[in-house]
Amino acid sequence: MTDTKQTPKDRFYWAEGVSRSEVEKAMADRRPSRLREQGPRRLLVLGLAVVMTALVLTVFVSQNKFRTYSEALLLILGLVLWFQLRKAVRLVSDAPDELLDERQIALRNAAHTVAYRTLVTLSVAYGMLVLAVTPHGLLHPHVGEGFWTGLAWSYLLGAASLPAMVLAWRLPSEPRDEAA
Amino acid sequence: MLHGMGRNKEEPLFNRIEAARTAQGLSRQALADAVGVHYQTIGYLERGEYSPSLTLALRLAEVLGLSVQELFSVRPFDVER
Image (cartoon, rainbow over all chains, first blue to last red; front, side, top):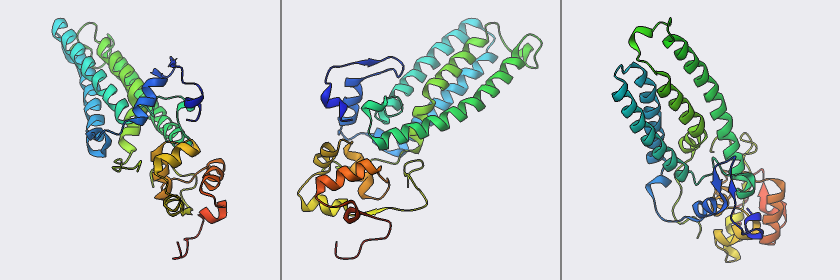
């Protein structure tokens, strides 16, 4: 965090998907917001989990046009929820070390560990589902052509948003006027 | 205690950061700026929900004009604070 004062130039961190100014703005934000409370943050996490599940379920939609529209709508909704989650955790889940203090780095690393374990479990589940819906799989007669797009979007959304989901779930509500 | 936040969840670390900070007339933001952390981290420290690294403990002690032993303890401080 001390580095931010020494190097005021803005920079985009491609691997993390955040910019210095974006993180600094999120850290300095003291406006009252529902996103600072644990309940609404957990609702966002649940909402995103529902969207990911719904994306998986689009494999069972046999009409191509309807499935494509459903996927697009769910994907947009998922992205909106993901960006709200990132905002809710002040980008701690994605920011690089040099923009965080030691407590925030510990929080981020703990969230990434849980997210990685969850992603491994999800990978197995998605893998099994892919096997089940392939031409000779158990669910094959019930899935439409091009079934894999919903699964792929759901998996990618999960892989990208899991650290923020874990962190948003675990963080307590922020006390008011803490800077005073 | 927030999961994964403390360095040693089994052993609580007591401190008198808040008392020392208010005695110096510093806000959490001012202290946070002086030691290079986010103001929320000062709140977590004061509530005993986060145990600092040795480096941060030394920085806090320096800014607050106390020794580390005067600022932190593994046993609760007496009423005098």
